[in-house]
Image 1 (cartoon, rainbow, N blue to C red):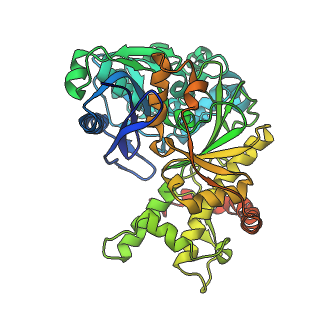
Image 2: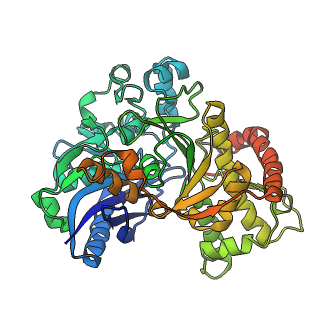
Image 3: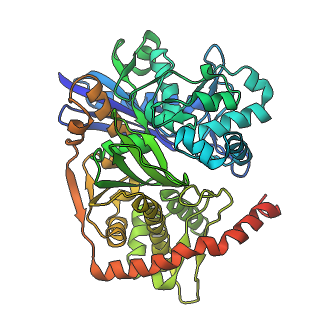
Length: 506
């Protein structure tokens, strides 16, 4: 028998399950996809049953691939901020409202005002109440769906709904709790004073543990559904944006992690919570005790590429070029894309511009531009958005010695080189980075049952497999293009607001 750790990640577009051994080597990995719904512009929802169906299929696939594996523990990861409302019998009351949903802007403003403005809110949580956070969704549900809200007894995020199905236990951990906007990240506990101001019953929020704590064991029902032995420990795990940093080997200060998934993320590990003077960064609890996590999230990264591919499919009889094909096309254009700049604000933006009305666009189009320029400009625009986030971190005193790249975009050598040129440091990928939150969840599960002494030791399992170094000419061109990109939001924000309020996009 091979001792193995199972990581499960409830993503936006699918569930990934993987098995690793005690050395951090991936033994098996499988992703099961599912869809989401957008019932109105700016709304994104998912049926939690699709998470469970996806998780069951993904887990079944990896267990079938390695039947000799003896599970030591299960770790959980998932998309953050998703409101999953439950009644007293743990029945889901409505489809989950996802992280990239933009409906609750007014509610977030009201929460901020009730807390005494941005500074009053930061004093309680060290974070803004961003559109998309769970807290604003709870208030939206109270204001707009009062009948359902009257039956609400529990609020959980996606991975914690999976925990409930597996173990029968309602619980969360500090990293996912940080992303509700209702958590005091400095003190690592629910912000009780804020809850009182908002007239929210603290009992609807789950008990909160450190991420490595065993927060339940697979019950009889969970064992029957998933084929996992009854009694297998299930650790707290972590929100995907946080836990995937340990999966890239980022757990101590100095290294950055960038993620190009559906969203774009720049993250750093901290030994103390940094000041967040205007709240544009997110300062969360890390998946290791006495460590914190600073990040900025752009709502559109790989999602922008997916949009472009899908749009092109409409011109090609339904056949979309692959992401690899798109990178190959982009490689035919020079750095700077012949003066074409892409703004990736296709679903509004979070960081560095917390603006749900922001819009995307290609700026600088001329008759000379070709498909290669547009493809490269899109990839460069995503890279610019990552560096735009990092400028806030740099101002907070967070340095960069190396970048650990992760997410689907990390598979592209071109995207990695763009980052190396613009950030001015080496960019590496590690063996587990492409596996996302599921790999980090498996590592944290190992910490929880003593396979590794702590998160720092577990992170040493992340071995580098690729490396890009800055190119002087490419760096100069990327910096020149970024200087133009960085001014465009301010130049166009008035037009974005006018479009959002005009009714033309309804």
